[in-house]
Length: 242
Image 1 (cartoon, rainbow, N blue to C red):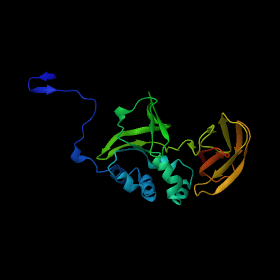
Image 2: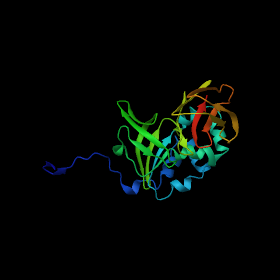
Image 3: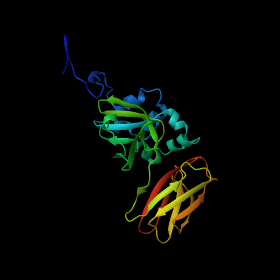
Image 4: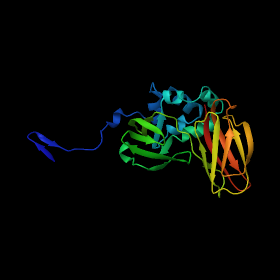
């Protein structure tokens, strides 16, 4: 109730967008964006356009074409050869069930994605980050959700295949020559298998200590998954060879 001679003003904390002007779906936002041609191609190839055109609501963290361009040469082409595999997993890691506006986000907030893995929100003096990707355009509203534009592609973290697994950490990621595998709370021996985006095994070996170094300099540039397994558990993570 800020009164004036000709009326009253109420201060609000968000911009109101007329509902009639909203795109119908988050897919419409992606399709109509000149900066998301790679994401559009990937969503259609992975057969997710229909899902994301549903009632939702959905929150999509949308990497730009420039974000995809940072990935090693040939990565997108390789992912598109198996769109229902690693590509679909990566895309689902960019989607949250529900509408999460920028005003709903909090520092250190953990949000579950449709892949079943979490992303972490960081709010600093430099901006808002989803994992290591910065939100460069926020709150693009659709009737079935919202899109936030980000400047990097999110890679899913460790995923659990069985229970009672040790905690898996791999670094550096992306990697040039030496990939370090650290297993916290690890005992005994385990096997590691490295797969390319087509699901082909490209390396295998034994893990018998808390920290193991793999030499990956002979791998082609691209996205790979590494699985650490025993008879009782298996854990998986993705890494980028550049």
